[in-house]
Image (cartoon, rainbow, N blue to C red; front, top):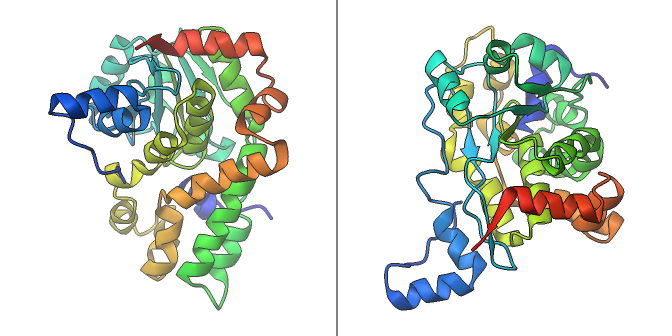
Length: 303
């Protein structure tokens, strides 16, 4: 079922772990041996979130330790939400960082309604998009049903995530190709920066060997950075989220969350069908062993 325009953003809307004390020599030594412990501190690094005026959930994926002791590079790969609010100052900051490739995971109507001003102002930036129509499907049924509830909303979002990797495989395939070709710094985004973008980030970090605990924590960080419910209630009365704002808060809340169970559902569905996330990346996204090694070289450094 094709979603009405007011629900198109819904497909996009579709924590932080306690940081161990690494201030003592003993704790620091433990963290250096344990990627999960090291990453619990790294996720709070002040470089994580870009200092932008109008950026939504715009962050750097650097600083994460992998299982084999490498560390993801800073200033190379960025994840983000809706770029429409980027100010001139923000655009100058992105240009300073040298972002040369942008993968916009939004549907055609989303991009048309809120264009990306950074790519419009920088003709030398490679801007990749895919024409498709957003489909809220089960989410629409949950919201419009007479027995709507938080439990049903959460179940619908879990189902949405199980299908998401396969549905957006064409976009993920192209993004991995760019990363293998070294077309970085690269930024990828959707509207909220948590669902399509969160799944893409989880796939990349998994390929690099970042532990699952860190992959999930990075996904869940969106809840700490963006007050999605606040944005919903503060939006214009005739805006795209107006109908959602009139619904019971408990029904809408699961759709706006970055619940760890959602990304676990996506990765679990991949593993159930393909055996492993790595197998999905190789078979469905076309990442050959040579491409994988190139991506690791382009996105990580020795510790």
